[in-house]
Length: 358
Ligand SMILES: Cc1cc2nc3c(=O)[nH]c(=O)nc-3n(C[C@H](O)[C@H](O)[C@H](O)COP(=O)(O)OP(=O)(O)OC[C@H]3O[C@@H](n4cnc5c(N)ncnc54)[C@H](O)[C@@H]3O)c2cc1C
Image (cartoon, rainbow, N blue to C red; front, top):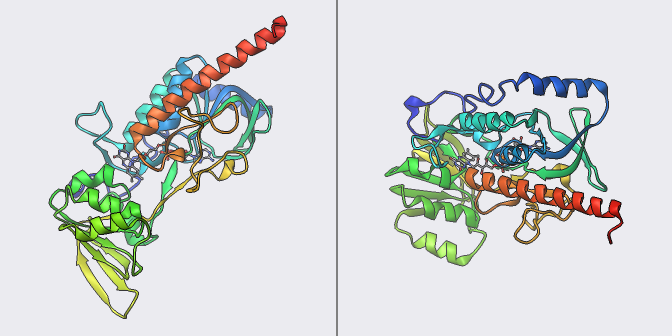
């Protein structure tokens, strides 16, 4: 995200459908269309669910391994980077790149090697036996291996003004956007450790960080609270709610309400970081795949394997710590390699069984 409003489009979804949703090559669309109209299940060696950095990297790797993956990428494909503008920390782009443009390049690279990308949500799965079964857009898909890369969503306050100014001073990612707020006065809203962590991180750039929390005390560790409270660049505003984000084209101030007494106040800031949590997109896999206490999918040991053999997990859906495009892409690569090796093992086991080798 850049806070240079002069270079920005008005819409936080700028570019959404222009690059990412460009039509797939003819051969690909034609074959999927035939399968769709036949009413038969569509079979694949690998089905990847999700088309953010993790899913599309898994698609590039599995496609280059000749596994002809199908990516069921979501009704709105491309993932979280579709709602941001400038991405300055993805390696290989020294001048930065727009989020939707970057995801368009991921998609083109996956399609170049034969990945089929379907713009639909998986709404039901049956992972009880192989081939695994998944349903999306009224079509049944069958897969020998599945890679789940459904990502996560940042939680927002739900204010119209917050939505309007997203990407123009309002952000949900300090690691991604802190750099744009050098020597600026900004605010972080939230009451957990991650809000305090983001606030401390943002002191490296901002001249002052105001932390706004609706309660009288913070959740989470006392150490983080002590560090934040004693930091010369952090000011805590307790018992305060954000009623409105003010500003025409970029954030200029916050209108704060008080939870402990009547009244309102205005806080002049040029940025607002919303740090009230993330929700991993796991609903469709609930009851099948194990989650941790925060709701993120679990993986086995140092691999991307889930609790179900043949189902692999990658990206923000299992990562509440790093949450970056490059880490998600890295996990997509790992999941693809894990899936490929697992499929090879299964083929070898099948051959041994056929040959009667114990
Ligand atoms: C505003 C913002 C700015 C950011 N800026 C940066 C940045 O500058 N640099 C950086 O490195 N990171 C940035 N990030 C973080 C980065 O976007 C994420 O870490 C990354 O996108 C995670 O990739 P992913 O593939 O795991 O998941 P996602 O990008 O979340 O993609 C998941 C995909 O799965 C799809 N999906 C979900 N459920 C289903 C289903 N049932 N069926 C089919 N598809 C489904 C979704 O529609 C989505 O397309 C930013 C995030 C936000 C929100």
